Structure formats: structure tokens, C-alpha cells
Length: 202
Image: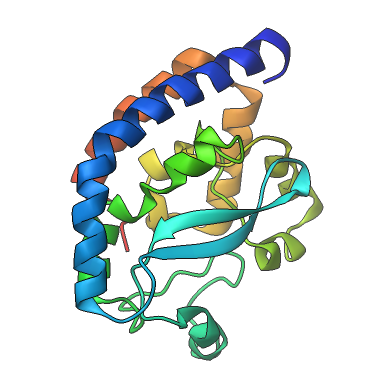
């Protein structure tokens, strides 16, 4: 993903990302009202993630949990039943009613289009990692940080949260090693059906 290939990928990110941002603006406005109505707290959830070259950036999402949900992670991890490198919880008590709807249809990820336009993310790439996850990586898993993280990727169209962490990393590395622009287009086209089937969504 360097040289002409990298520039082509970036051009697609800018063109499609800008178009998607404009088209989704009315929907984002309606969702912002629903979030404010459903629970106290900000509309946007900001969280530091690790991007290309291990550089940190602030990832944006629509808030789907109660305000202060990050402070409850240690308590939920203590209950067991998940991988600390990839923590997602079934029946997560922090998720609001509106948040559950947003997550089911992946609408909470729309603000990440701004991260794409800023060059911190790509439309397609590995899942954005938390710093705590990176600290727990095995050496072979660090290679997924050589490219920009994506709003969607091979992990999403192949099972999303049904997959274990190691399986997600293997899919990311296979994507990086076999990258071509046509594959990005294919993943983008497969993302909508995967979301509509709600396969593995939490």
C-alpha cells in the first residue's frame, strides 16, 4: 500500500468518504437528537486508538453506552468470559436502548468518516486497536499496525464479533499481504449485506 497503490487507496478514501459524509448528514442529525433524548451525556464518544505506525489518534463514534462506560470495563473483565485484547460483552449492561439499535445496524460508526477524511483511518483496513490491546499483542500480531485501520474490513464481512481475536488478526494480515484496490471495493460491497444480516453484531 505504498507509492501509486497507496495514493489510489487514499484517493478512494477521500472521494467515497466525503460523499458518504454529505449523504449521511441528515441521518446523523436525527441520531444525535435520539441519543440526547435517551440518556444524559455527549452525542459523540471519543476514544484513543492506535493507528498506522503505532501513532495514537482519537476515534469518533456515536455514543451507544451510558456516560462513563469506560470506567466499568475492569469490573466487566473481572466477570470473565472475554478476551482482554478484544473485549466485547454479551448483554453489556452499559449499552443504552438507542445505543443497541445503533450498534445493531453499525450506525454508531458513521462519525469515523471524519477520521477517514483526516487520514487517520481508511474505509477498509484492520480493526482500530486500543493501546491496552496492543500491549497484549504477540510479536506476529504487531504487523497489523503497518497500515491505517479501517471502518470495515475482512474481519467484519467474515463474522464480526463471532470471531476470536487471533482469527481477526489472521484475516487482517491476509488482507494486508494480498491487498489490491479491487479487494477493497469487494469488502465495501459486502459490508452492507453483512450489516443487514446483523451477523455477529453486539
